[in-house]
Length: 313
Ligand code: RIB
Ligand code: CA
Image (tube, rainbow, N blue to C red; front, side, top):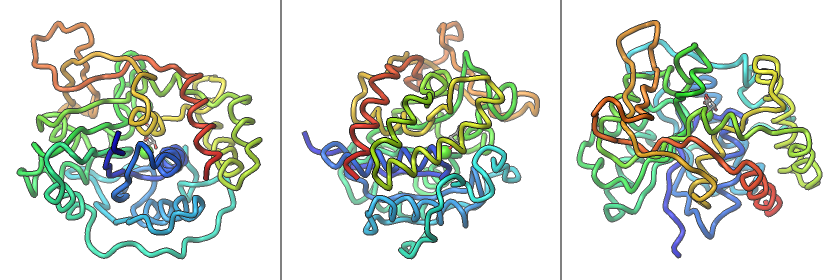
């Protein structure tokens, strides 16, 4: 089977970093056309820095990395240094990047790639706020039917929210963008908190990363050591939820996940529930299904895949 051509749109973030590393470690399944950065966990200048640090950590300095939107479509930027640290990649002591960003805007790269390849070829993998994706769809509506699939991390239903009681961070930061994407008609697979909160990096799982003994394995363990303190304190969980690598793992082995094809709409009016993914899990609304919303994960299989792939870098 040919590797899937994908664009990772991201706001690194330690969990984004692991998602990128898993993609780079899986060339048989994933042909990474490029990485487009967006403001989210930290401001754009740091997300573009961190994406380059991660690619250099993996020794993949030929990856095309673009800067994208530095703020949401219609709201002030909300960041998450309280979770990811002031750099967004706190934990390991990694060198400043030397590889350059590509010229040009991330949105134009997304448009160009979708126009260059045959319809149904390119998969978009948003791991942060959907600002770049929505901007591309608004600027070039012709690309929407060309998208093979959007596999994104965002939202929550049974789990509620993680930045407000109702909303998950990626959707909350730019609800207008999320609304554009979820109404676009592009095929969408959602990795919500309902799934990612079951992908917990327990001590034994993090020790397995560290025991790889490679710079990547050790750095991932150090990222998780930092990243997990917030979630363990907040949820009393056994470890950090590895949100974004669920997207990459789905591309490699979709059977690790189960979910339902349902209607998902985004709250964009009420400040109380702003950014909530209103997932019609019980199909009571009569609204047209527009997304495959994942509900469960084979967590052991996920971590086995992650560990088995990261050792390759
Ligand atoms: O809510 C979790 C999501 O928000 C993850 O993608 C994390 O990296 C942050 O972007
Ligand atoms: Ca992210």
